[in-house]
Amino acid sequence: MKTKHAFFLGLLISFILCPGCSKSDDATDAEKTLEEQFIGIWKPIKFVAACSSGSSETEIYSTCEQTGRLTIDANGNWAETYFYEYTDNMCEEDGVSNGTWKIVNGKLIVNESEFEEAEVTFFEISGNTLKVGQYDDDYPCGADDTSSYYYQEYIKI
Image: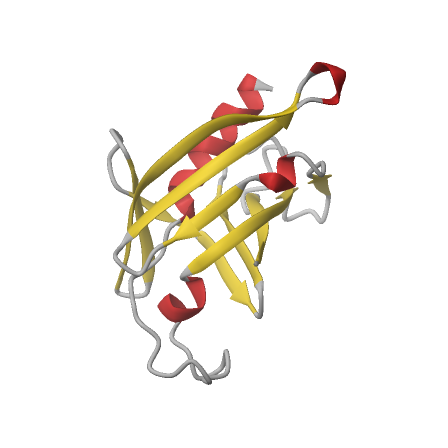
């Protein structure tokens, strides 16, 4: 699990977007800026890895893992808490990550504490669903599969 956790920490760097305050609490998603849609508390649902050949792998997170939260603040800070189910069905906190986020020229830039800034290359918000990850030519899809990507999917709570 620690290897998986380290892998997701790398993904986490890609989880942060921009600050912003809503102009109106009654605004529809279409009227809100990307930053306004992004700010809030998100629950992790699954991890997806896909290859341009069409193959993909999906891991649905356990109820325990879905206890984790990604919190995106309007002030440009983010924090994520991870949970994991160890022996005896004990769901325990498995770590915390935090840092800052911003959007520059339409690109999400994140910084995890003690790491350099990184650009998130896979980012989508649709309704209450958030997908954050990376395009990765080195992902194990095969030599001819250069458009592979992976992401974590969240729902807004």
